[in-house]
Amino acid sequence: MIATPPAAIATMPPADTEQAGFDHHGGIGIDISVEAGDWPPERVLSRLAASALKAAVEELDLGVAAGSEISIVFTDDARVRVLNREWRQKDKATNVLSFPAMPVRPGVALPPVLGDIVLAAGTIRREAGLEEKPFEHHLIHLMVHGFLHIVGYDHETDAEAEEMEATERRILARLAIPDPYG
Image (cartoon, rainbow, N blue to C red; front, side):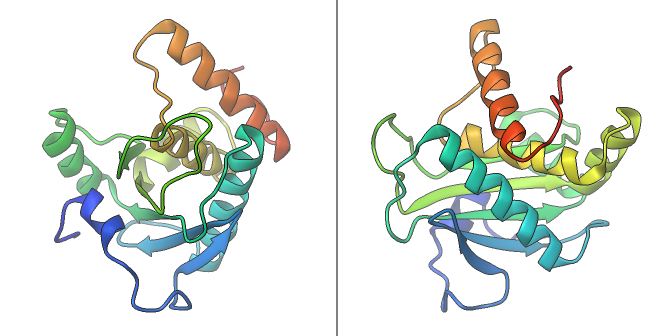
């Protein structure tokens, strides 16, 4: 269980950027934490996260400040349910939660601390099975989805949802992942 609120995790500087679970991809340092749940090995998660974020940064043509970093927490449905209840007042598990550390403005380099993406193993596996998608494809899609929230995308209105989904499709196409909505 995370002892501090998710946004606070990202603001804690790592003691050493060569530590296990921390790597730089697409100019963004990725701090991987496998907290709970049935996940592939950390090296696989790191590779998938690197691919997802690199494709997103390239598709969005984002400026990445030296030292920019993001935290990705791989956990279980129970932990995500608690976070969802505490931060969104929704008492249920969900597939991904995003906690931006600060607002991101279009056309400006990303800040040094981006925030946290938290993923729920059980929900993601269930959805992948129900939708007959490879688990890794669905996981990458949700990492991209979470990252888009971190950099300011949302889907509260139909227009926002259409823009966000179109962006997800373009990013996933870079990775040869089929349209998750089609």
